[in-house]
Length: 308
Length: 308
Image 1 (tube, rainbow over the protein chains, first blue to last red):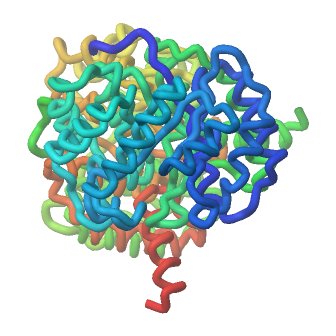
Image 2 (spheres, helix red, strand yellow):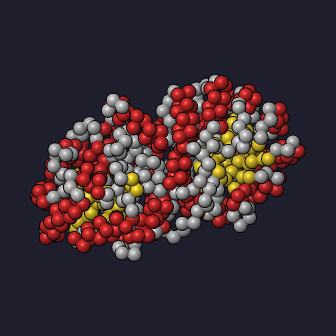
């Protein structure tokens, strides 16, 4: 099994996790949580989104959060921006990296950002240009790279077409999202076989939702194909917008368990991450569903029974 | 990705699932459930265990269950037997296949069956001999093939030593159990690299518990190495005896989703399996934790909200 010796984990919990919250989480609690994430060895935290608060009220406090977190040296604090107005708000609070986003499938793109794929390009192009002019790196998010909730299977060639356009705008990295968590390793392999002849492996990140439990299997296949950047969210936060109550992002702590056991370095401290997971669990007041948190809860209960 | 075109799924829910139940499930309910499993296209169902009821009271009704299920042609109905007394009880009710069991690690073997590994061999040897004399095929279960709750990592060479002894007794197939669900694909690969030069792939089955979410990833690696027999339990039943409340066996329906999406045939009907999962969920009165059941519950809630 040919595997990379180290990978980068990009923690998207504060954005992709919290944007689906039903309950309101205070700005102060978000800041406390992000500050604890900063102490765990993570080198990248996606902090919030500058999408208009009308669309994602959960993240309306993006500017306040970015202004007040304790920035740790060596950690990149990123945020999503949908357009120039969003970019301006993000630059005002000195975001480190800007993330733009669109979908590989026409129907999801239209449903999510109310534009066709063709209409989306010029808007993102402007954002990339201005962000780069302001000295920021830019990450692209491409959603529904394997399956679309409206169109079904998405052809790898279609993903490549959109990826081509995004890279030619000047993005630094592209995160490929299995947004609805339908992917299996054979599909991941076909997708990467389509993309890797054209893009460098270190410009591509994989972003798996674990809706059907296949995220870790998909990550192993990605690792075997040379991918070294993975998005995840503490506690598997995020849910699935198309099946409320179903599982969300692959859980950072479960991914860490697997990577470390496979001898792959991440620079992230599992104990610190678990502390941070307990923190957001307490803030949300709901049990996190990652396997590591489940095991911890089980052991804790056993210890209570045993009087430890 | 080199994969088999079809695999056999061995449903262990009625035994490995129900043996960990806190609540009591009636014999009639077990029979109803097993009868529904028989209609789903599964070719192998592990029905119960003839371990002394003192040790597993949950399965004390093994004989009643085996006597009263509706046997479908083409389905193998198997049961665990620990010794000659258990075998006799199993043969009395015409079990199709007999399963013997032991552990690859000394401490787990001692803890589980109160004997050293060396002391276990002659007992199993008798059982295999008598079972074969009675015209039955014999399956071996080897627990803790990757990690042991008492000893930690288990060396692949140790697994091979025990496997050698079991095959030389005359077992037909060996199911390799990651009993506590600690394994990751690199470890699965090392284990199978040790075993496959000595045993045929079609004599080996993999039995993964999904305690840490790695079961499907481990199954993909096993498939790539030529394994075509996998144990699973509907709804991920079974839990973890070492962390009560944690996840159990890999869920049959989640495994089916992945295999079918990968183009691998199983002969099992997903809809029928889901019907059977809902049945045992109702009997147990507790939400099953498989991803497929989670998605179904989420969709069901959405439909209720939408008035569908």
